[in-house]
Image (cartoon, rainbow, N blue to C red; front, top):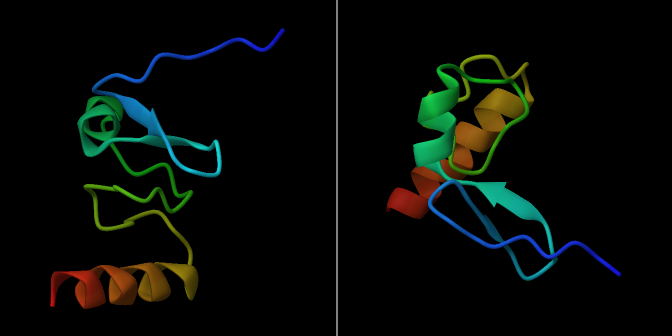
Length: 64
């Protein structure tokens, strides 16, 4: 039997069944982990190039 996780302010489960951390949770972490989290509030500071530039461009496109 699978463990069912209940969604809360720290994460949600997307349509693919992946756990997605919220900006609220990531802020509590204190810094960018470098994994390219969808809701990274730290502008992907520790994500290596060229992935960082790619993620920032996606974010800019969403804001338009």
